[in-house]
Length: 232
Image (tube, rainbow, N blue to C red; front, top):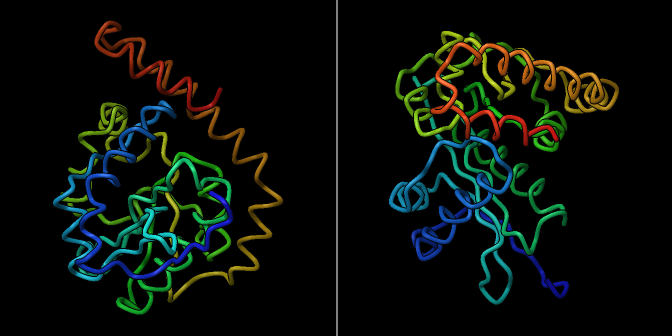
């Protein structure tokens, strides 16, 4: 990384040259972690750049560092999706910087919208809590069929559907501009409850694994391994 200055900004059409690199890293990262992720195409990422609905991080010499984009649902909900950071720049604080900028951009473009996210990682949960997000049930998220259709390419999709879209490995988090705690409060709450959240995630994993015992084991072997690796 060589202490290069990292620039975090709203993406432009000129950044489309990074689209394939971004989507390849999204897929590789998900496989390395053994987690499910809804796949994105380079064309879709490029469209978000053209629309001004994405944030990108690059070095001064043009090296790609990280990315995230905005999706809208039903005119009432906004999701900050696809957060990804290049392996060479991880654990540098850039993910938090990107999340802060995409959150700010979402508030600028959609000041009255509810901003939500689904995540399997405690690190992302912490970043969201710092911004004022709160853990919620799936019923408080958008019910737009197009949003849930995006989960079909995730390895955990069968679990989601077996729970009637009411639960899955991901934790749902929401920022409601009309009814929310201040970021300081949600941050302090997360810090106090982080061990509890971690324990609840493990309980959720174990519960879903037991539910899968009645499903064809051979066709779901990779799914079970992915779920196990998520917490071990």
